[in-house]
Every structure is written in structure tokens, then in C-alpha cells.
Image: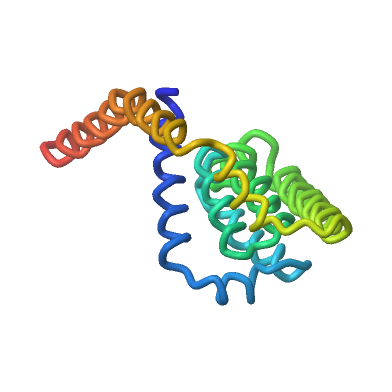
Length: 176
């Protein structure tokens, strides 16, 4: 958990920003579904340096704002697999051609899976926004609060260690 806690809270904060600041109408018009929204999500997700831990709450926030489940799936698949760091390592290990094939393969498979997921939702008449809303009602508020407090308690030390080590690096670099 120590390695994931910081990223988890980054994802929660970004999800909160998306939920509160981005208008649903804007999100739905660009990312509501279909091939064009998935291509747009590819452009957003490929260069983003985000791990799977942080991308999950962000994808949930997108769905609450009207993004199709398939488009959110594209974000979940592409973001962690194609960030700048992993691509630079792959170029060094495999070369530019193999990395390009890797990138194209991930993009194609993600879009195919996203389109398939959207077809399933449409075919079954399921509203992703309604499903996400219902899930929050299943768990009692007291359990939600207890789980939140538990996550905060177990996250204090690892997050503090990350912050303090980052601050020490900054201070050390300025002194040099």
C-alpha cells in the first residue's frame, strides 16, 4: 500500500476535480461514446503519466459525468500501459519500430474492447451512470465512513514519507 497510496490520492483528487468542475454537457459531447470519443481518450491517455491505481477513480468520475463505459475502458487500458516513462524504456530495450507496434497494438485492442463494451451496455439497455449511483447506495454510510477513515489512517505514513523525501531532494538540489 505504501507504493500505491500517493497515486491513489492523486486519482481521488483528480476524480473530485472532474466531478465538481467539468460540466457534464461538455464531457458528454466529446466523450459520450463512439469511435471519435475513444480516439480522443487515446490522445488524452497515451502521454499521461498515470498508474492503474490513480486511473480507476478518474475513470469512475468520467463515467459519472457521462463518458461511455467503453471510452472509460480505453482510458483505463491505455493510460498505464503507454505513459512516457514506459515508452522511453521500451524504445531503449526494443527499439523504435517494436515500440511503435506496441503502441499501435495497445491502441487498436483498447478501441476494439471499448467499442465491444459499449455494444454490450447498449444491447442490454444498461445505464453506466445509474449503475455507479446504485453502487453507492448498497453500502451503508457508516461502512463508507469507516472505510474512508481506515484508508486515511493506513495512508498517512506512506504519503508523509513520499512528501518528506521529495522535499529533501528539492532542498538538497537547491543547496548544491
